[in-house]
Structures are given as C-alpha cells and as structure tokens.
Image 1 (cartoon, rainbow, N blue to C red):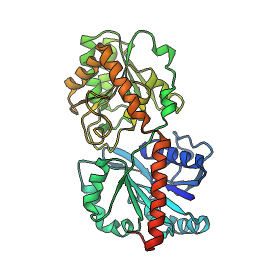
Image 2: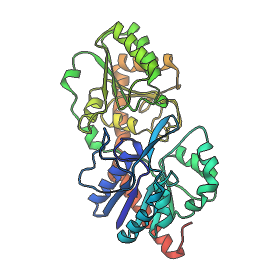
Image 3: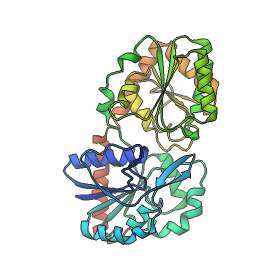
Length: 384
C-alpha cells in the first residue's frame, strides 16, 4: 500500500503524537509499504526528532498554541491549500492516516482534498470537553470524510465519541520500541549506590513535576542516598526551580536535570532507574512513558488518572496514587524502594505488559484496520 501518515504537529519538536507517527511509519515501511510522513517541519528548530531514512513531506511552518496545559506547534498557513491539493494529486495514496484529524490546520486541508481511504487516529483526552464542543459544528463535515476512526485508548474514545455520535471507533493503542528499552544498559555513573527516581516528560504543568519535587523533599527527610533524575524538554517554572533549590540545599548531589536527551540515551536512563514516577495531573489519553519504563524493568508509580489506568493495574504492574497528593506519591516511591520483593514483582509484571505493546503487534492491528476500511470503502463508495 502507498500510505500517507499525517501529523498536525511540527516534526522538529518531540511529543507523543510525533513519536507515534514516526515509529508507526517506520514499522509499516519494514512491512513493505511505501510510507510518507506529512507534517509541519522547521528544520532550524533547536530540537528535532530522529526520522532516519523516512520520507518526509514538509507542509508549512508552525506556530505555538497553548492547549490542555501544554504547547502544540501547528501550522495555521491557509495558503497551503493549493500545495496540499497538488501534492495529493501527484502522490495518489491508497490510505491517508491522519493523527488528530480534526486539529488545525494541516489535517483538515488533507481531508478536504484526499481521494484516498482516510483513517483518523484520535489521541487527545481532557477532563474539559470544550475542545470538541466548541468546534464540532465547524469540523463535522471533515469528520464525515473519514472512512475509519481509531482511538488510542478507551479514554480517548470516550472523549471524542459523545461529540460526534453515530461513528464507530476501533481502539488500537500506542506502541513502543520494546527491545530498545528492554535491552538498554544503565549509565555506570548512575550506579554509584544512590537510588534513582526518574521523571521523563515535558515540564508542562499537567505533567505534575511540582508534586514529584514536593514528594522528593519529604523523601529526603526519611531516606538517604536518593537521586531525582528529570529528563525532558523545557525549563522548570518558578515553583519547580525553588523546590529544586531546596532539594540541593539538603543534598547538593541529589538532583539531575538533563533537558532533552537523544533516543539512544533515553532507554539508558530508564534502565538506570530504581523507580519511575509519572505524577501527571490529568488530560493523559495514554501512558507511553509508563510502558517505556516497564519495558526497561523499572517499577512504576503513577497518578491514578484516566489514560494511565488503561496501562497500569494497581499493585499488579505498578502503583497508582491520587494525583496532586504529595504524601501518597512519596509513600508509593518509598514503599517500592524499601521493599525489594515488591519492586521485583512490579518490574517483572510491567515488562510482560510492555511487551504486548511492541510496534510489531500494534502495527499489525493498524494494517488489518486499513484493509477493513479499504474493503468497506470499495463496497459502499463513501466515508461513513
């Protein structure tokens, strides 16, 4: 099949959707498909995703928009219409797979002109429904141009489906490069006797870093030889910076803030962790970082929120704690660090969970769904 995989987000900036897009595209190429990634792209940006030898068709420069407690870099260039139309006429894709298909502005342009079988994957989840409620009438006609609809989790499905009733959604989860994390070697310098607590993510408010830092100050009063490792883009806000200073006052070597790291180094940080903590406050449709940590064998302590519950079963493959509850976060981390049998049990069960989300399994489900949508489109001749 000749497949276009479309992201609304600038490929030069890392994020969950872009990781999904590039990794799924790579797996589909391994299976013999002719795959192109279409997305806004700013090559001069200070950060970039690794695209390997994938074919990328850049479409428009991006601007940052605030949404759901984080920033999304999308293109708002209306002048792209003729360029998108011409590209689709030249390429003649069999399948156009749009991620966040109703996001501004590139996916809507592609849907407007695509003559292929159109499949949309919905990633978003939020406790506040205004995102689709305010725009559903404006984008309803583009929703009707989809032949198939995927949600990455039950939470994502339940978020979008009430606003566009009458459509079926196939739940196909995000995937991970399981072996890249399972086979990673820890950093020798981090195996120095300290116990490593790892956080991976942007420093956006909804990722909950502040609550982990407050918990870390509690842990410092009870346990010795701790180290908090913070991996991910962005700068700490004022509250987080003050908490980092307080932790350093207690122990100058107790915190490490790396900033963004390479795809080669990220699995090594997971492999170096004695416990992984994701204290997100909500609006998570899925838990990719949880699965990455599980694949590396790290026990997981995470917020008990929609999206994360689709990945973690409490006291089976991780611990779930109330969001924003610094005492509960500290208790979960301490319990894992002080009970080797609990840590081993959670780590082993987590690795078995993560293996089921390897891209070879997820891409097979996507591939089968493409074929189903092609068959149904052939029989009825229209999106539905």
